[in-house]
Each structure stands twice: as C-alpha cells, then as structure tokens.
Amino acid sequence: MTHLAEQLKHGAGQAWESLTEGWRELGSRAGNALTRFWNDADEAQPANADGGRPSVAGKPDRWLPPARWSFMAVDVYGAHDKLVVRIEAPGMAREDFQIEMSSPEMLSVLGRKRYDREHTDSSYVLVQCAYGTFRRDIQLPAPVDVERAKATYEAGVLRIELPRHELASHRRIEVHTA
Image (cartoon, rainbow, N blue to C red; front, side, top):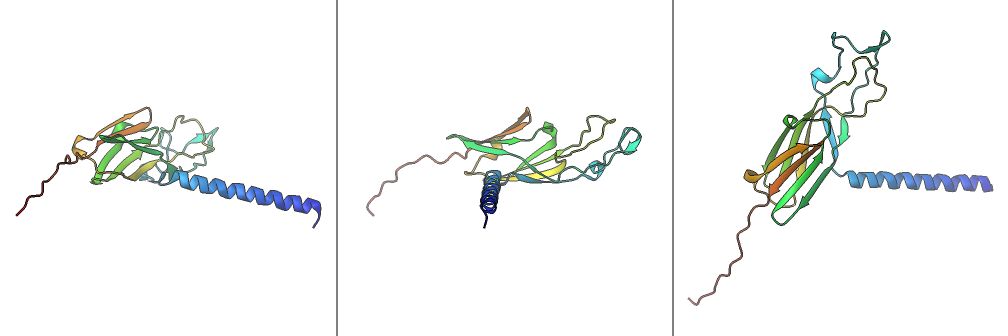
C-alpha cells in the first residue's frame, strides 16, 4: 500500500471514529429529549391571507412541511423539599400547555406549538422547527405532592415546581416485654 493510501485510510478511520463518537454523545445527552410532534390538520398546509398557498413573485411557494421531531430539553433538579422541572419550549403561550401527573413520580406535559408564519409575502427555504401537538413524559426521582404544584411560563421556559411528599418524621418505637 502506498504512503498516500495509508494516510487516506488513517484519515478516514479518524473521521469515522469522530463521527460515531459524536452520535454516541448526542444520543446520551439527548436522552428522552427527542419529542414527537403530530401535525394538526389545519396547520399542515399554511395559507396566505387570501386562502391560497404562499407565493413569491407570482410563483407558488414549495411549502416545506415542518419537522415532526424536535428536541425539548428538560432539566430536573431537586432540593430537600421540592423538585423543579424546566422545559425549554420557545414560541408558545402558557395556554398551550396541559400538565398532568399519572402517578406521584410521572409528570406528563402536553402542548401545542402553533404555526405562525412571520411574513405572508416570503418563501421558506428551510423549516427545522416542529409544530403541532406533543406529549413529553418525565420520570421523577421521587414522589411529589400534586396538590401543591405550581407552574409558570416565561421567556420560552416552562418551570414546574413540585413539592416532595412530606415523609413521616422518624420516631422510635420502644420494645416492651410482653
């Protein structure tokens, strides 16, 4: 094998190793962040104000459908008295969320990200944002008290405060003779 062929083989091997390492890293960091969006029928094909398909200079716009999968990053952190869940969900309103607890340790966030075309006289070339309805289930590390939970949405972040269940305080039980 020539020296050039050896260099090419070595370079290709390094590139492949780097690529596979990147995918492994992405997979491990993404965890369950990959979220499925279901397109709503009324938003699948956006229209102009006149009801027709968007166009530029009289030519019909080739509508690129929005992504059906997107990353919704979630942080869960806890203090001794509560858990806090933060979900990055830009471009939504607080009314777009529904939060449920299917068990004391399973949080479900349902939502709808609406399509909002910024300019009716423009043509999209790239659409990477996901639109439609979604459901994100988050396994919590400890049981929480749903009755005292609070949620806020500000600056594209949904923040859910979940007080931990109050555990019975430790007390000693004396052993008596019968």
